[in-house]
Length: 471
Image 1 (cartoon, rainbow, N blue to C red):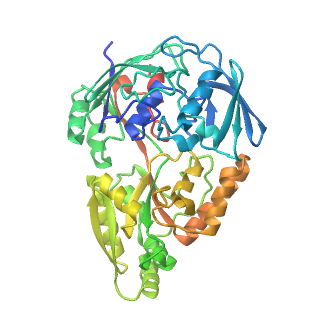
Image 2: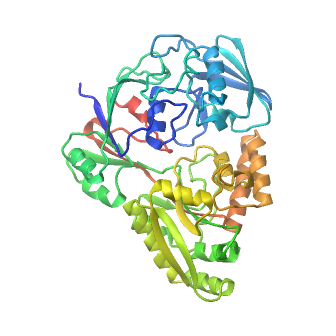
């Protein structure tokens, strides 16, 4: 049977889960490897994966029972010693994992039996279960040098058969975390150009593209024979970022006026072709920690009056965005809307590296950005806590707000789920009142599929484990 062919826009930088950070690499490594926990594809709550169950022994200790009979691709049995070694390797400076921060709150890991570990925390850390989504490696390979070719032994549903420039062949693997009998081989093929991806789908030479097309191109694909579009609401948020500590945007009245000027619904309906929802909050509606709030009202008359009062005369600012064609179009539309309320906005498109560099250095006034995977609400700490100002984190707006810090600290250390939801609702209200990050919309996860992959639907954060259940 011919392998399913999945088209991706860029190459995976590495297939080593200790070092993978780009979206393609992250999603590919989750096909090769498995964690103790996986995230519910809808709510993103942690669910057992390699773990069978867990129990909080105390606020600083979690006992995890492992599944029996699980084996690595090589046939080696999966045991508690692999868990202990993996967490130690992710923490070890000599390994240099880009995900060391995820496990920094973990102190010791005790092996109580072949199938039981006791994880000790150095401080109360509510996100531990989500953090245990990190891929588990074989104990004798956990500290090995980087293996970008994907040759690390894994516990995922696939193993790398061959890797070449622009192409990764994945073969079904048995004995791991997921191994249904109908599993097919998959080829990940890099096709950089959007039109070339569309032609391959039209010609029946490819089976699946996830988030690889502009929304306005989707109607043509939907009408192609043998092609369909599957979509679901996504766990992401596009937002407007302002430098909050200096210049005219340090005035909260200015930030609120700009937020009120933007017609989110119109952008979602037109430029995003109805494949997005206007954002009420930073957390998306299907997330377990979401609490409903009204969408920021679009009122140009009120925005113009508020801006004139806060900043007499025309406001002149720059708006940084990426060189992506759709993002540039959206940025120019936002500039047009802001011009109508008294703000002259110069749109500056930049390559991603340059854009992130300028944001990190604080060399900006406004920017449009996206959080592509909001799996755990504690991620907001990276973007809002005063301790996360670059280079320590991604608080690029230089937010220094004692109430925001307090709520983020409380959310990180509170174990009770209902209490955490209340905390994050209060955080969202504070962020909204102060217009510290301005949520715009949540974009759908969109899969363009052939008949062979017609049942595929991505998870809320856009990952690909749905491949495993295709008939």
